[in-house]
Amino acid sequence: MFTHLTPASIRPPFAKYSHGVEVSEGMRLVLCSGQLGIGPDDAIPAGTEAQARLCFANIEAILTEAGMTLDNIVRINAYVTGREHLKPYMAVRDELFSEPAPASTLMIVSGFAREEFTVEIEAVAAAPARSA
Image 1 (cartoon, rainbow, N blue to C red):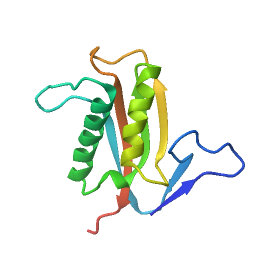
Image 2 (image 1 turned 180 degrees about the vertical axis):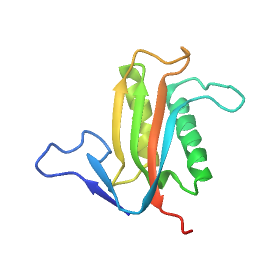
Image 3 (image 1 turned 90 degrees about the vertical axis):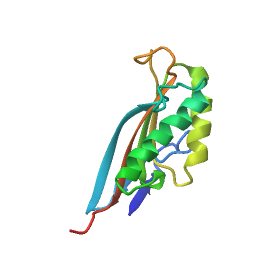
């Protein structure tokens, strides 16, 4: 289904992620918009770890609608508002994904739409095409 690409000719990943993931022909993709740590009741948990868990729970809900799970994720883009938020985010990511892990990018940004948010996560998932 997926081929994780980590060429020996380049430096190994810094953390739990793959340099690339090849998606086989005939797969369908789901592209998840960036998810923030906000619940359906508009509650925003304190702390990056709690927000990251909620972001991934929101992504999981989106994937469930498509008949997929977090195991179908091939790429993660994550954004945090400061270096102090890197470790809490990575702890959640590393807990949820086993090796070989998805391709991943993690960036520090100046902020989000609301000050309370410390992390935003978007994902791309792939699964076999549905039969007609």
